Length: 291
Ligand SMILES: Nc1ncnc2c1ncn2[C@@H]1O[C@H](COP(=O)(O)OP(=O)(O)OP(=O)(O)O)[C@@H](O)[C@H]1O
Image 1 (cartoon, rainbow, N blue to C red):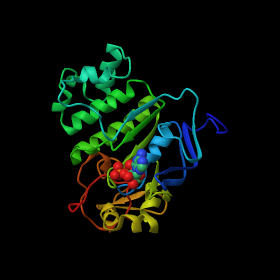
Image 2 (tube, rainbow, N blue to C red):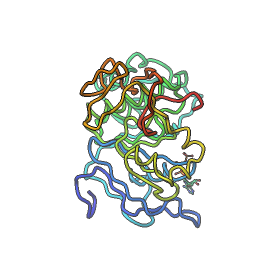
Image 3 (cartoon, rainbow, N blue to C red):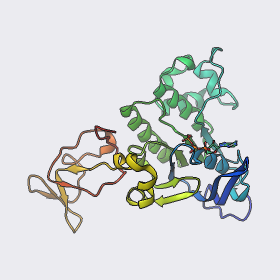
């Protein structure tokens, strides 16, 4: 860490705030990301998510509090907006090398990791939303970062594409061993892969595991109707017994719900609709019809 911080976290904000134009954009933010941890910032428009991420990255200096980073921290950043003059031709190959020197083999390896190797010679302006996000992720991981900061990584991506990208992000965390700080509006899908959620509204309104946040009164108040939509009523055909085993619809009992009886919703299949409902949580990845 740069000053008094402990080296366990990659980045840490301590009671950090930004004051601009006579007002606090964010204030009193405590936040830490450890290696291999996925931390997600959620909150309404203008709640300070990008501002908080920029403080963590060192792009903005806190007006109060501290922003600490592990020494020699390598960061891969996918910003919310790409500042590109779209009237000029720009191939993926060139975008990958802009503002960073990268070998051809590293470039291909990174693009391969995000399923975008075939896009190398494509014009960036012609990419679909999902293709662009894959290329931007590849660009961010090419530096072999300790920390990935992803500001709205599924913008412009359709629902099934979102699931793939969130799965890919979780895999990248496993493969690269990096920490991830993610910003998302998507209250359904993002939660599947996140370890810790911080809900912002100019300050930290609530935080914790996705399940805990989804139950919190302040989260529900903040998101109003959308919080309701976020709460996916997870109905399926088995019952969790007090001893941890699972009783299936056919009466059989097994040690877990993995396998043919219950696939992980993270892989986008449809659960059946059956005899009981779990507590509503945000950790599932399926969208209800009205989402
Ligand atoms: N450089 C700046 N100077 C003054 N105000 C700013 C500056 N940057 C952001 N703001 C304001 O700070 C508030 C928080 O902005 P920020 O972009 O962090 O929110 P956000 O939660 O990321 O929003 P969104 O979900 O819309 O991307 C907004 O009201 C914005 O207008």
